[in-house]
Amino acid sequence: MTTKANTITTYTANDRAIVDALKGADHPMTLAEINAATGLAPLKPGSMTSAVRKGLITKGEEIKVKRPAKREVSTYSFVTADALKGGKDGKAFNYTSSETNILAAAATMPKDTPFTLAELSTAYGSEIKSGNINSLVKKGNLAKVGTRKVDCEATAKVSTYVFAADIPNA
Image 1 (cartoon, one colour):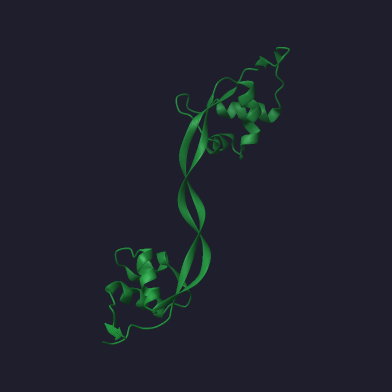
Image 2 (cartoon, helix red, strand yellow):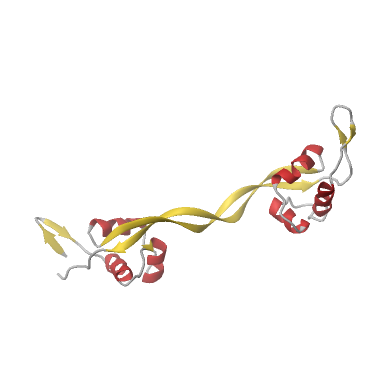
C-alpha cells in the first residue's frame, strides 16, 4: 500500500500476479495469456483496467485472435432425386451433372435428420456452397427446413498488456 497526497493505493493478489506474468514476458500478452501464466482463477478485464490505473501495466496494441464460437447455418432435407417438372410450361427441369451428383450424395444422408452444407459436403467428397444447391431447392429436390448452431472459429480484436512498473514496497 502506498499513499500519494491523501490517496491510498492498495495492491491486490491479482495485481501481483499480473505484474509477475508480464515482468518476464518477451512480448505483450493478452488477458488469456496472462490467465494461463498466472494459474489463478481467471482474471477479468476489470483487473487489467485496475492495474493500468495503478501504473503497473500499460495497454499495448490490439491484435486479432481466433476464438471458438457458434454460428447459425441453414439445414436441409432430401426430398427426391427424381427429375421434377415445373415452371410456366410444366416441362421437366434440366439437371447438370454436378446437381445429379449432389442429389446422389444427399440421398445418402439420414432421412430423419436435417443436414448442413458442411455435412452434405462430407458426403459429396468436395465443398458445396449454397449457390451449388439453390437451384435444387427451387426445383424441389431439396428443402430448406431450418437452422442449427455449429461450432466455428471467429476472429476477435483483443488488447495486449505490457509491464510498466513493479509494485512498490510498503
